[in-house]
Length: 99
Image (cartoon, rainbow, N blue to C red; front, side, top):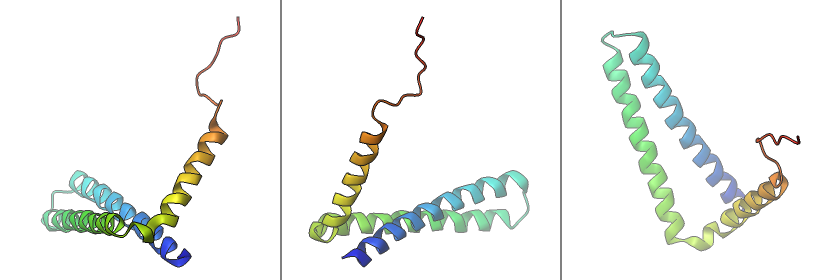
């Protein structure tokens, strides 16, 4: 089950990275140029974003359909979140004036 958890997390991060790179590419291409290559390039990036969204939706459906497969993943993420909240408890960015 550890390999499955590793693949699931890696694939989720990969899809997120693909979407971010595609968005930045669209913004950069439309900002720096108005050449003929920009429109096909941006369309390709758009379809990459759509495909990533569909892939994420499929993973979500699988997660909801077969929750026993993802039990370890959800538990580890919950423990990580609780651990980070406990470590950050009492820390604040606000300054307190002790006058």
